[in-house]
Image (cartoon, rainbow, N blue to C red; front, top):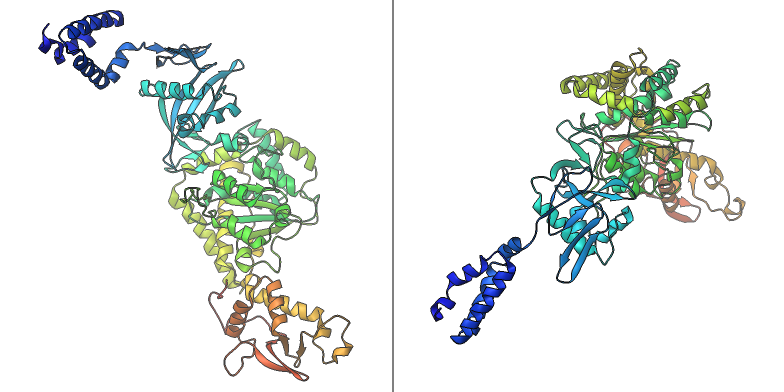
Length: 615
């Protein structure tokens, strides 16, 4: 060989085409010896190094062995340099044997989330003599720091083998793209697009068990459907509106999205021992396990945790026993009602100053309370979103313990059958049924001259629609909700009007503190009490501004909004400058006060119509 031969590209190709590593190295040394004789060894070594870098990937494939997995009763996958069998996963390097994991593990499938468009990986692994699986975000197995979190699920990964396990999982996925299947997945239940309803779809995987495993696993069919059906049909014969309404509400939850309406609450209230909890269990058993600690929401949960649960349930009903436990913990219960019925959670920022995905839901919320959920001081908009049914004095069930015991053992069937039948129902027919009830309720309101809020009529029309379909698809017993009784459950506009309710609260407060308004000397007032205003005549009373503002605030309203409404309906006197508070004399003092009618009849339809400024 001459200098030109030694430094040629052809020689380098010939060297690297030698399959035997030993023969290649031996030939390389002979070439280097000849290059030294020709005084071009330095130049040759530089060319050799550059050529090797350019073809390193190709050489690596050529030099490395190609093993396959040998996991009992599992698919055979290419594992490259990794030896993977029931004894663990390892490879040989120049530093000796490196273990990726001491037990079998491999990526079973790739999950493409339909909502977030992100990927998860389902890992299957053998620990403690059984195969288990877990679904994790792909980023978890892409980092030696984050993959250690898998240790909490039983996978034997530590800081020592984390890097090797990351590399093994990456290699085996890359080598088996055609063999590791892909599936559509979702982290939510209920309607997930294109007429699909989880968990009843075989082609869509739920990928959120790690976070809400108990909830997801509770939505199963267990026991005997006929036993459940016979029990519930027997109780329906008593025609208790509390039970019929809750059953309808449980089915109505999956109609909220198809009918394009907002979530709403159905609340049953009354004293203990009436059967409220058993009724909630029956409603829950339509879809899931009604036993304690399973599907029914813990009333001690936080609003944020409730948002997460609602997002997962999506179309399925949220059921809460004894909502009063939450009511007593939140500062403004009206805001909780707004949250539940808004259909979406609060926007939250990420650490990177981005926005987290907003939680959303379209369902029905079923609750029980000992007292009416809607108090006089709750905002009218919140009352609008709640349909209440009061337990009658007579117990709902003659043998509540027997009913509860049977329901605890048999559940989850009715919801499945309802969805299968609902999928075959033309969308137009569903809409027509709901519109029919909507029109009937509005006609009843007109005939009875009892105007109802549309935000009450719409949910009730959906409840009646669900009741009709449940009787047709499931019970077939001819027992239905009575529309007249349902109409009476709807609140009238005056019941919900924040202005009317604040006015009533104001008058009640004045009546219970009448001595603060009577024309007496200040010395005659009870000790430590102040004058709040004065009766002007049999029809009007003046309330000093600061006390008026405080009473209206206690009523759950705002002084400015109330005065705007009161001015519109003509129940307050206006000063010459058009202000809602005018100067009133109290002996030697002159104070700005609100002068308002004392015995207003609340019939203001001739004076005002339309939306209240704060409703």
